[in-house]
Length: 395
Ligand code: NAI
Image 1: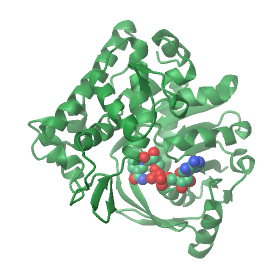
Image 2 (image 1 turned 135 degrees about the horizontal axis):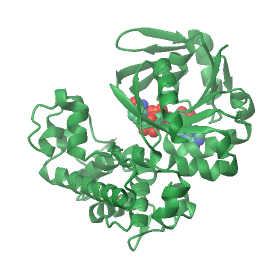
Image 3 (image 1 turned 60 degrees about the vertical axis):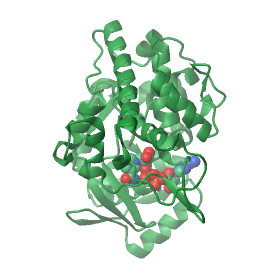
Image 4 (image 1 turned 180 degrees about the horizontal axis):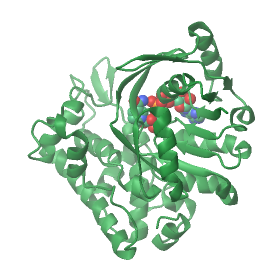
């Protein structure tokens, strides 16, 4: 019997997953595309191309999904696995659309999860949450890009190993095993959504480097686009180091209060960098050298917009617009509940919220008017760390 899978989303990740999974005869794949005219464009593209082509460094796959759906009932009623291949800001609207029709016992998860995904699920599903299993990936397993919309995507590179967590937590190994078979990558189950979130170094690196590169910008366009990772100097590395130490302090506090909690995957930034990229780092003697000489980061540019007068920073880029409200702010909110002060993270957040024209942090508290468009625990009415850990089953 075929496994029914629904992919939600129409971007780079969704193209890649659709081509990959639809090429597997054991699966029946539906794509849920309620956004704009995406469904129409996918149907046209698939008709012309015979499916979605995915070029990988090793081979080319072609897969034709069984249905392109605009109606949430059609999209998910039969699905045993539902994949949200979406930017974090789209998780909530899509989950609200599909929630009434999800099959009992379905596995529903996001690639990548970002922070507070489980809080968002609990808020939407309420007492029905126990009818499903939720999961989240630490990151998208691939660097991938659409080549031709509705027709073709390219996998530029695949991660060697990707962490996954689930709720209930004891389901993480079985989901990891099944998705490992389907995706052809190595998936490592980790203990909880809290652990997955604290381990997410993107929340340090992306806003931290943006702050480092642009906090002194005077509004005059730059002559050239800046490098991103290779521009990390001693000063920017110190920002990243301090942010990482503050998250480690939060981890230590949680481990003191809850000796049984498992947060081992939340590693300090230098350790994470060496573990992830050891073979590609030419000079690992300092944190800034580890960034600047990491061959995997070579040539990657800072998000900037070309204008007639030169290049200006793109403050709406995902490095701030996704990594702040759906990552760093969520961690900052947990730190507040745990009574940990985070001066460096606060400095970065205060700068970033101004660039994003948002209000998240006010007088040292996660209580700004834009909280409803975040996943900080304060948004969901959680007021202390005991409530968070117990209600969310982090032990
Ligand atoms: P994308 O920007 O290509 O996805 C856009 C898609 O999201 C749209 O096509 C639409 O289907 C959906 N969408 C956008 N706004 C929506 C809304 N308001 N309501 C409903 N749906 C909406 O993103 P991509 O590249 O597929 O990435 C997905 C996630 O993976 C993001 O969080 C991204 O940061 C992350 N990621 C992507 C990588 C890549 O190589 N593409 C690498 C690592 C992480």
